[in-house]
Amino acid sequence: MTDEGQGLRPGDVVFVGRAASVQFTGRSGFVFRIIAVDDRPTYAGWVWLDGYQLDRRGQAVARRRIFVVKAGLRRAGTPGSSLRMDRRH
Image 1: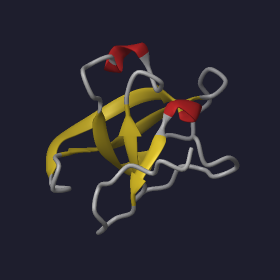
Image 2: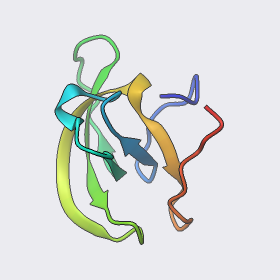
Image 3: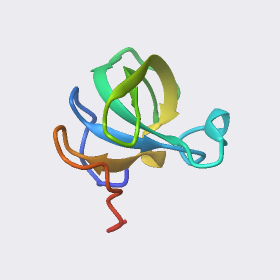
Image 4: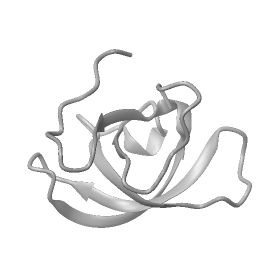
């Protein structure tokens, strides 16, 4: 993840786009609230995440299980905050 050294935890809100996986090559990607991180071993740097795809207001619109590269995720805010992208990275 772009915040070096930080692990993914339930409650984290991240932006999922092309950098996270080629399966998310849509126009603008989506914001995702993590509810579970699968700790089983996978390919180096990849992880299965359970959570909710969020709309612009931060409301859950779909429950999903996704397989992504951790380094390709960007923080999109914290629970209860606005969904502005963290542009520091």
